[in-house]
Image 1 (cartoon, rainbow, N blue to C red):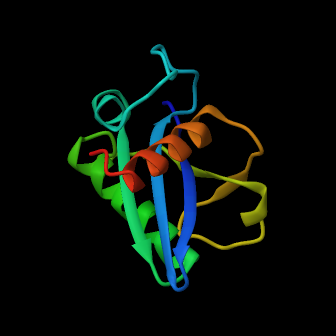
Image 2: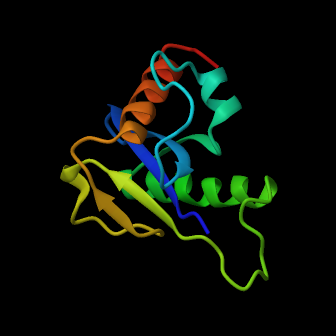
Length: 129
């Protein structure tokens, strides 16, 4: 069974408002191009693409994690009652390594999912949907 990873990108746009993007894929190299990804393309090929905001960074990331799990249930990638449900690991920038989130996390300096999450957040803030 393939495990899942979710890349997290965040920005504190204004004081007291943290914006987060989360993109999810299997723990494997993708068989599609990640160069020049747009939000519609990400929504078409990735397992989940989520945007949230919150007063604290932890709240915004946990909301993104919760919505990611919900999206994976809706798509029947995660199925309640299965003997073994795939684990989801959050990939975060090293600055967040000591934080606590709903899902286990792993700090990474570089990963294609982190780049995709950064691209998604940037595009979302520019109005791409």
